[in-house]
Image 1 (spheres, one colour):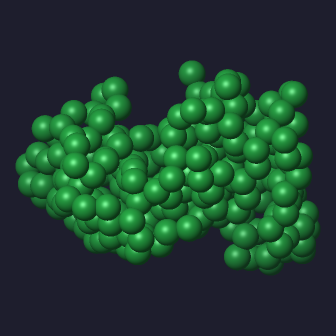
Image 2 (cartoon, helix red, strand yellow; image 1 turned 90 degrees about the vertical axis):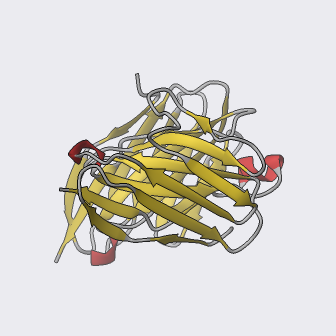
Length: 112
Length: 119
Protein backbone atom coordinates (compact mmCIF):
# COMPACT_ATOMS: atom_id res chain seq x y z
CA UNK A 1 0.00 0.00 0.00
CA UNK A 2 1.40 3.36 -1.02
CA UNK A 3 2.25 5.43 2.02
CA UNK A 4 1.98 8.71 0.13
CA UNK A 5 -1.35 9.62 -1.44
CA UNK A 6 -1.84 12.63 -3.69
CA UNK A 7 -4.97 14.36 -4.91
CA UNK A 8 -6.31 15.24 -7.30
CA UNK A 9 -4.83 12.89 -9.85
CA UNK A 10 -5.01 15.65 -12.43
CA UNK A 11 -6.40 19.12 -12.85
CA UNK A 12 -6.80 21.76 -15.52
CA UNK A 13 -6.59 25.45 -14.69
CA UNK A 14 -6.59 28.68 -16.66
CA UNK A 15 -3.46 30.75 -16.91
CA UNK A 16 -3.25 33.26 -14.09
CA UNK A 17 -5.39 31.24 -11.69
CA UNK A 18 -4.26 29.61 -8.45
CA UNK A 19 -4.46 25.96 -7.50
CA UNK A 20 -3.69 23.72 -4.54
CA UNK A 21 -2.45 20.15 -4.60
CA UNK A 22 -2.79 17.79 -1.66
CA UNK A 23 -0.54 15.12 -0.19
CA UNK A 24 -1.39 12.77 2.69
CA UNK A 25 1.19 10.38 4.08
CA UNK A 26 1.43 7.60 6.62
CA UNK A 27 5.22 7.33 6.62
CA UNK A 28 6.50 6.96 10.17
CA UNK A 29 8.86 7.89 11.64
CA UNK A 30 8.84 10.92 9.40
CA UNK A 31 11.93 12.90 8.48
CA UNK A 32 11.07 15.32 5.74
CA UNK A 33 8.71 16.00 2.87
CA UNK A 34 9.67 17.23 -0.56
CA UNK A 35 7.71 18.49 -3.53
CA UNK A 36 9.15 17.90 -6.98
CA UNK A 37 8.10 19.19 -10.39
CA UNK A 38 8.51 16.80 -13.30
CA UNK A 39 8.12 18.12 -16.82
CA UNK A 40 7.11 15.58 -19.45
CA UNK A 41 10.11 13.49 -20.48
CA UNK A 42 12.38 15.02 -17.86
CA UNK A 43 13.64 14.11 -14.41
CA UNK A 44 12.03 15.53 -11.24
CA UNK A 45 13.32 18.89 -10.01
CA UNK A 46 13.08 19.82 -6.33
CA UNK A 47 10.73 22.67 -5.41
CA UNK A 48 10.65 22.58 -1.60
CA UNK A 49 11.91 20.52 1.32
CA UNK A 50 10.36 20.66 4.79
CA UNK A 51 11.26 18.92 8.02
CA UNK A 52 8.60 18.11 10.61
CA UNK A 53 9.27 21.37 12.45
CA UNK A 54 8.56 23.54 9.42
CA UNK A 55 5.00 24.29 8.38
CA UNK A 56 5.51 26.44 5.31
CA UNK A 57 8.15 26.92 2.65
CA UNK A 58 8.04 29.07 -0.48
CA UNK A 59 9.90 28.94 -3.76
CA UNK A 60 8.74 31.77 -5.99
CA UNK A 61 5.10 31.17 -6.91
CA UNK A 62 5.14 27.78 -5.18
CA UNK A 63 4.23 27.57 -1.49
CA UNK A 64 4.21 24.29 0.40
CA UNK A 65 2.59 23.72 3.77
CA UNK A 66 3.02 20.85 6.18
CA UNK A 67 0.93 19.68 9.12
CA UNK A 68 2.97 16.92 10.74
CA UNK A 69 0.18 16.20 13.24
CA UNK A 70 -2.37 15.34 10.57
CA UNK A 71 0.31 14.13 8.14
CA UNK A 72 -0.87 16.39 5.38
CA UNK A 73 0.90 18.70 3.00
CA UNK A 74 -0.24 21.00 0.25
CA UNK A 75 1.43 22.76 -2.64
CA UNK A 76 -0.11 26.05 -3.72
CA UNK A 77 0.66 27.49 -7.13
CA UNK A 78 -0.05 31.19 -7.44
CA UNK A 79 -0.80 33.01 -10.71
CA UNK A 80 -0.20 29.91 -12.81
CA UNK A 81 1.77 30.08 -16.03
CA UNK A 82 1.80 27.79 -19.03
CA UNK A 83 5.22 26.54 -17.91
CA UNK A 84 3.64 25.21 -14.72
CA UNK A 85 2.10 22.39 -16.76
CA UNK A 86 3.81 19.34 -15.30
CA UNK A 87 3.46 16.51 -12.83
CA UNK A 88 3.97 17.45 -9.17
CA UNK A 89 5.23 14.69 -6.95
CA UNK A 90 5.13 14.54 -3.15
CA UNK A 91 8.05 12.60 -1.67
CA UNK A 92 8.44 11.59 1.98
CA UNK A 93 11.54 10.31 3.74
CA UNK A 94 11.70 8.09 6.79
CA UNK A 95 13.91 9.05 9.69
CA UNK A 96 17.22 7.18 9.64
CA UNK A 97 16.61 5.96 6.10
CA UNK A 98 17.76 7.29 2.79
CA UNK A 99 14.91 5.76 0.85
CA UNK A 100 12.18 7.96 -0.58
CA UNK A 101 8.45 7.22 -0.66
CA UNK A 102 6.85 8.71 -3.77
CA UNK A 103 3.30 9.79 -4.34
CA UNK A 104 1.76 9.02 -7.72
CA UNK A 105 1.81 12.69 -8.63
CA UNK A 106 -0.73 15.28 -9.70
CA UNK A 107 -0.71 16.28 -13.35
CA UNK A 108 -1.39 19.99 -13.77
CA UNK A 109 -2.37 21.42 -17.14
CA UNK A 110 -2.43 25.19 -17.50
CA UNK A 111 -4.43 26.52 -20.44
CA UNK A 112 -4.28 29.95 -21.99
CA UNK B 1 22.93 20.07 -5.05
CA UNK B 2 24.77 17.86 -7.52
CA UNK B 3 24.08 18.04 -11.25
CA UNK B 4 23.60 14.73 -13.06
CA UNK B 5 24.11 14.11 -16.76
CA UNK B 6 22.19 11.06 -17.91
CA UNK B 7 22.41 9.46 -21.31
CA UNK B 8 21.00 8.39 -23.61
CA UNK B 9 17.90 10.52 -23.28
CA UNK B 10 15.92 8.00 -25.30
CA UNK B 11 16.42 4.82 -27.28
CA UNK B 12 14.46 2.29 -29.26
CA UNK B 13 15.79 -1.24 -28.84
CA UNK B 14 15.02 -4.65 -30.25
CA UNK B 15 13.72 -7.48 -28.10
CA UNK B 16 16.44 -9.58 -26.59
CA UNK B 17 19.09 -6.88 -26.71
CA UNK B 18 20.40 -4.78 -23.82
CA UNK B 19 20.64 -1.07 -23.11
CA UNK B 20 23.18 0.55 -20.84
CA UNK B 21 22.33 3.89 -19.28
CA UNK B 22 25.02 6.15 -17.87
CA UNK B 23 24.88 8.79 -15.17
CA UNK B 24 27.70 11.23 -14.51
CA UNK B 25 27.58 13.45 -11.42
CA UNK B 26 29.48 16.72 -11.23
CA UNK B 27 30.59 16.04 -7.64
CA UNK B 28 31.35 13.04 -5.47
CA UNK B 29 28.25 11.42 -3.99
CA UNK B 30 27.98 8.52 -1.60
CA UNK B 31 24.82 6.89 -2.86
CA UNK B 32 23.26 6.71 -6.28
CA UNK B 33 19.85 5.29 -7.02
CA UNK B 34 18.18 3.85 -10.09
CA UNK B 35 14.44 4.18 -10.63
CA UNK B 36 11.89 3.03 -13.16
CA UNK B 37 8.87 5.14 -13.99
CA UNK B 38 6.19 3.45 -16.03
CA UNK B 39 3.71 5.57 -17.97
CA UNK B 40 1.40 7.52 -15.70
CA UNK B 41 2.93 6.06 -12.57
CA UNK B 42 5.31 7.21 -9.89
CA UNK B 43 8.95 6.27 -9.49
CA UNK B 44 9.86 2.77 -8.34
CA UNK B 45 13.29 2.19 -6.83
CA UNK B 46 15.24 -0.53 -8.66
CA UNK B 47 18.44 -0.50 -6.66
CA UNK B 48 20.89 1.52 -4.62
CA UNK B 49 24.47 1.72 -5.86
CA UNK B 50 27.35 2.42 -3.49
CA UNK B 51 30.92 2.74 -4.69
CA UNK B 52 33.03 -0.28 -3.93
CA UNK B 53 30.21 -2.68 -3.14
CA UNK B 54 27.49 -4.57 -4.93
CA UNK B 55 24.25 -2.78 -5.58
CA UNK B 56 21.30 -3.44 -3.28
CA UNK B 57 18.22 -4.45 -5.21
CA UNK B 58 14.59 -3.91 -4.23
CA UNK B 59 12.03 -6.67 -4.23
CA UNK B 60 11.11 -7.66 -7.76
CA UNK B 61 14.39 -6.53 -9.32
CA UNK B 62 17.36 -8.85 -9.85
CA UNK B 63 20.97 -8.32 -10.77
CA UNK B 64 20.83 -10.55 -13.85
CA UNK B 65 18.17 -8.34 -15.39
CA UNK B 66 19.45 -4.98 -14.11
CA UNK B 67 23.23 -5.16 -13.60
CA UNK B 68 24.65 -1.97 -12.11
CA UNK B 69 28.18 -0.64 -11.99
CA UNK B 70 29.54 2.03 -9.65
CA UNK B 71 33.25 2.31 -10.41
CA UNK B 72 33.77 5.62 -8.58
CA UNK B 73 31.96 8.32 -6.59
CA UNK B 74 30.81 10.26 -9.66
CA UNK B 75 29.60 7.63 -12.11
CA UNK B 76 27.17 4.74 -12.41
CA UNK B 77 25.59 2.64 -15.13
CA UNK B 78 22.42 0.60 -15.28
CA UNK B 79 22.01 -2.10 -17.90
CA UNK B 80 18.56 -3.40 -18.76
CA UNK B 81 19.18 -6.88 -20.17
CA UNK B 82 17.27 -9.24 -22.43
CA UNK B 83 14.78 -6.55 -23.30
CA UNK B 84 11.08 -7.21 -23.71
CA UNK B 85 8.25 -4.76 -24.45
CA UNK B 86 7.39 -4.77 -20.74
CA UNK B 87 10.70 -3.00 -20.10
CA UNK B 88 9.52 0.05 -22.03
CA UNK B 89 9.65 2.78 -19.45
CA UNK B 90 11.55 5.81 -18.25
CA UNK B 91 14.66 5.05 -16.23
CA UNK B 92 16.08 7.67 -13.87
CA UNK B 93 19.15 7.92 -11.75
CA UNK B 94 19.42 9.96 -8.59
CA UNK B 95 22.17 10.98 -6.20
CA UNK B 96 22.39 11.99 -2.58
CA UNK B 97 25.00 14.34 -1.12
CA UNK B 98 28.05 12.67 0.43
CA UNK B 99 27.12 13.26 4.06
CA UNK B 100 24.27 11.21 5.53
CA UNK B 101 22.87 13.97 7.73
CA UNK B 102 22.99 16.47 4.91
CA UNK B 103 21.36 14.00 2.58
CA UNK B 104 18.24 13.98 4.70
CA UNK B 105 17.95 17.75 4.51
CA UNK B 106 19.02 18.51 0.99
CA UNK B 107 17.32 17.68 -2.21
CA UNK B 108 18.03 14.45 -3.97
CA UNK B 109 19.04 15.31 -7.52
CA UNK B 110 17.69 13.40 -10.50
CA UNK B 111 19.02 12.83 -13.95
CA UNK B 112 16.87 13.89 -16.89
CA UNK B 113 15.74 10.32 -17.55
CA UNK B 114 16.08 7.76 -20.32
CA UNK B 115 12.95 6.87 -22.26
CA UNK B 116 13.30 3.27 -23.43
CA UNK B 117 11.02 1.76 -26.05
CA UNK B 118 11.36 -1.93 -26.83
CA UNK B 119 10.03 -3.15 -30.16
